[in-house]
Structures are given as structure tokens and as C-alpha cells.
Image 1 (cartoon, rainbow, N blue to C red):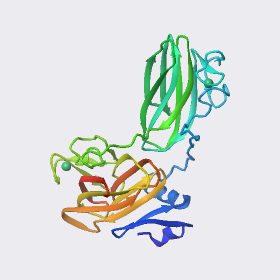
Image 2: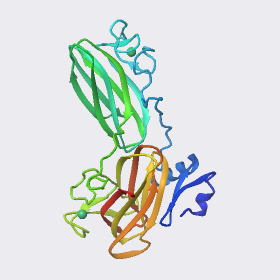
Image 3: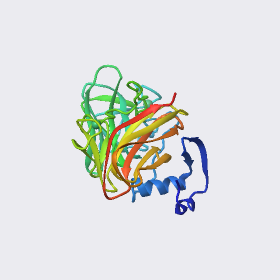
Image 4: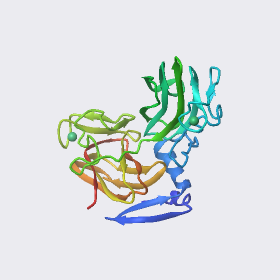
Amino acid sequence: MVRSSEIYFIRFVSIVFLAGGYLVLASDDMQRNEVSRRFIDPVNDLPLDLPDSSGNYLSNGGFEKRTQQWSMTTTSEFDSSQARSGKYALKLPNVVTQKKALDRYRIWLYGCYYKGSGKLNLVVEKGKSEVARRQFTGRGSYKKVQIRFKTKFKAKHRFKVQSTGSGLVDDCFLKEYLVLSKPSNGEYFRNNKFDYKSAAWFNINGAKYVSSPTYNPPYAVELNGKSARMLQNVVLEGNTAFRFSCFTRGEGPLQMFVFRGHTLIVRNKGMPGIVRNWTWEGNVFRTLEKGQYEFIIKTNSNRKVWVDQCSLKKLS
Ligand SMILES: [Ca+2]
Ligand SMILES: [Ca+2]
């Protein structure tokens, strides 16, 4: 499963689980980086920001250190009599921003507590593009305002609080969205038979929905070439065994990966050559901690592979 060129990079590999002939690996940073460079994001070595012990990725979100970590484009002012927590709250109107380097393909919650008579905009930007924006109307007491968004790229993102009218903001937060995915009839993937175009999955670099061939109509997914891939995030409980499988046909090899952030949990190579009939490919793995896991299906040939009816189920 691991080529000799890869072994060179691996200082430490621990086998945490062995089932059905498939190795499940937990590995150190060198292997993770090598895997992520080769399969995920070949040029991007940006170091990621880490959360504090409460899971908050923003620094000084409660403004106790006033302007520290935030850049302010208008006069910075702080209120010290009506803070929601600690001594200070940010006084509006104001525009403040903070930058954080975030991982790709994750779901996030960005929010603050807000009271006031104006409008508050929470905005997420990457470079010159806007990733998410929502406007809130204030009221007399603090209320939680938040937006949920996905990151498509490993990149620095800018978090902006933008307001008109007077008011106060306190306890801003940026957290990974970690509500456990609920299975439907035991199935953890959403849109697992690709019944609905572009629902739940990221289809990347030419992965597309096709109406023929299918394992079950109306659609299957066609992967055309080495960079095309399908990806879905699922939030799973920790230390639990799951089976990840799909039906495939075409000219392989097909590769199925499970990642937790940069940690490769399992890699399966199935379908070594030309497969004319729909064939089941699957593997078993065990989760590490509770969190978002990334499921990736791709081909390692420059020919077409079709994928349908993928499944993610807990082992009983
Ligand atoms: Ca505060
Ligand atoms: Ca289908």
C-alpha cells in the first residue's frame, strides 16, 4: 500500500486498525505533508492557524486586548460599561477585520454577540472575493449572530465586522461546525446515490454527473482524468469503525481516501485495470477524535471511471 519512495519520508507510522486486508494508518507530519502535496494541494504549504482550548480560531474575540489581532479601518473605540464578557466590547459604528489561515473543505461558524440600533454585517473574504456575508438587525440586548460557510481552499481568510448605526459587539468566534452528521437508514453520506446534481458533494476538476452509465438512475458521476475527484465532509464520532464503499466501473485504478484535516486515515486502491461491470469497492477504517472527516474518490488513470451509490456506514 505504501511505495518505497514514500517509506523514505515516513519517520513513524503506527498501525491503529487492521480489517479486511486494509491498512489503517495514523502518521506524522512528514507523511501527511507528502500526501497532501501530492494528492490534494500540490503547491500550498501555508501553515494553518489553530484554535484555542475552546475551539475558537479568532484571537482576542472578546476585545479584552482591544485592538490586538484586529485591524480597524475607522476610529477604534471600546465600551467598558456594557461588555457582554470581561471589561470591553467593541463600540459601533466600526469596521474591524482579522485574518486566519484555514483548511480547505471544512464547514465553519463565524459569529459575534451584538446589540444596537443599526445593522451589522458579518463578512468572510478570501483575497478579493467574498466567501459569505449576512446582515443582522440589532436589538436592546446582546444576541448571537452567526453565519455558516464552507472553505473551498486552504487559504488566509479575512473576518470582518462591519456596521452602520450605534451598538456594541463582543465575544466574536470562529469555530469548526461540529454537529454530528445524522445517518439516514444507517447511511452517513448525503446524496449517496448521486440522485441530485451537485448536492452534498464537492465535484472538483471535471468530475461531473452523467445519466449514462449509471448503477442506479438518474445519475452517476464520471471522473475523467487524474485531477477529477468527488469529495464530501461528514462529522463523525471518535474511535468508531466505519465502512466506506462505492460501485465503480471504467479504467482504474480508483483511489478512495479518508482524511481528518491533514491526517491520512485510509487509502484504498481498487479496480486495477479495465472493469466493464459495476464493481463494489470498499474499505474499513477507524476514526480518531470526533470531527469532520473528508472522503475523496478519484482515479489514478487518465481514462474515465464512473462511480455510483457510495456508502458510509458504521460497523455493527
Ligand atoms: Ca469582552
Ligand atoms: Ca445513481
